[in-house]
Amino acid sequence: MLRSQHTFPGLYVFRVVVRPDFTTGVVTAIAAALGDGGSVHEVEEKSSRAGNYISLRVHAKMPAAETVLDVYEVIGRLDGVVVSL
Image (cartoon, rainbow, N blue to C red; front, top):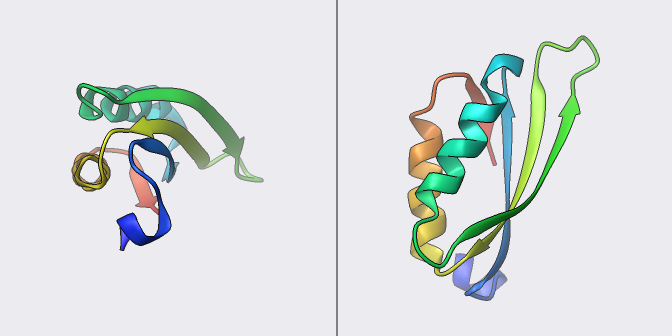
């Protein structure tokens, strides 16, 4: 399904909702999971109204669809992650 909606290598946007104290760790983990051929291009942060959560949009150059799945697997194991899309 990823290949039908995205071109690889190419940009992909990870959307992750985290607790405020975990933003740096999540972005660092995503960058580390990208491996060779991948890189983070931009990170957008938006706080929830009450400031309890941060919505991250991590724009990354992805070498392959399999790498996207690997990154989601890493995100799923991180402390502080509420949800990833």
